[in-house]
Image 1: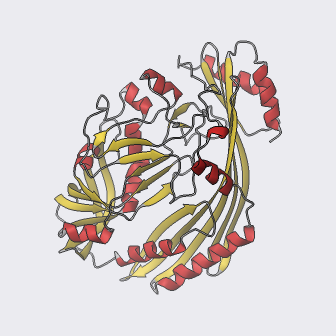
Image 2 (image 1 turned 30 degrees about the vertical axis):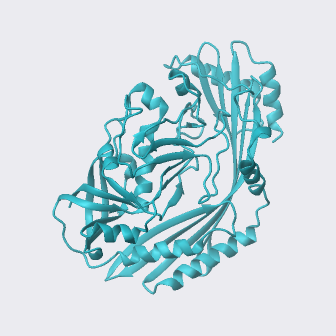
Image 3 (image 1 turned 90 degrees about the vertical axis):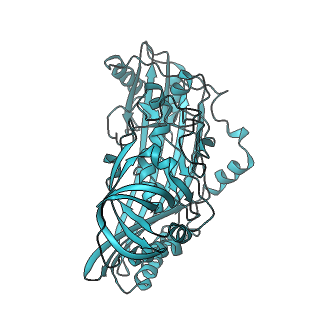
Length: 459
């Protein structure tokens, strides 16, 4: 990326008025193959380099560009001028080489992953993997009528460069498999979608996807009714994933400082049962995604947010950690829905934020529950949870469980309550643990199945 040299030179002689500046470059090279009916039905190849710029003086401003030939000093000035006209008075804090990520100080585990995650992409192997996945799923259940199997290869490169001397880069490969099916069960057409990722194409567990699809179809049994009320509940891993896609914001250092999380003022208190823990980490063996440093250059580290029910830590970027006189945790990110030429300021985001798994299988959780409801699917999660209050009302569907076995399916439901109550009602979590990426690959969340003593269900 030769354009980086232009920014390196600009950092040594900043335009007038700018005291310090930083760029974060994110390059995503993608090959995506979709197979349906034994044929390649989708081919997508892309290579996008995004340059995020911030410049501070009287204020901090931000800019964004994908034009690699644009004059570096002009981009810095645009960022700074955007700050001058903004309502925010905040001046951001930049890393120095002493506090930023240093490749020479990586531990052996990270060094190993660094080498493993850099290798050329074999596009024909991606096609073969997608063909194999589609064939396995299509043959696994006679009720399956259509299959779209997608395998994607991403080469992700990150660079942080600032006027204080930070200049760091990291590159890794991620392989992602996703399957969409339509099946015909008892005269009804049903859809199911599951996905996985890994740092190696060979290690993508296609059998896991086949099993999840087959289990999803098995849960589509004869429908019945459900009276609204409180029930013992098991939440499927996919429901836990959907909840965590939004619920991680409870543990944002920025939201904690401005009082916009339901956990404000409760650091150090018990907010869940002893069976409930949440951890944020830079890498996990169940996913190919890896976050060695954040968009400010702070090294990623494991952070125990909830330890057996106790609210022990927050996720921080440089600014939020300074407000509480703590160290940053490598959780600087951006509003992931802002793209194009919209200036993007820095917030707190997770790396890989997970509810910790337990020792029993989901089937054992259902048997232990005896009578209750197994919530198998949930929808519209981003509009169903209020982070400020913790209240939620999530549309879902599931299966009524009698004596530990499926009795009948129940549709058009909603689970309602408060996240803190849900955390306190956790009896156990399963060992059936999955991790999924966020929409724009900016972070991941993970969850096992979760058994609750009670949860309000409206039918």
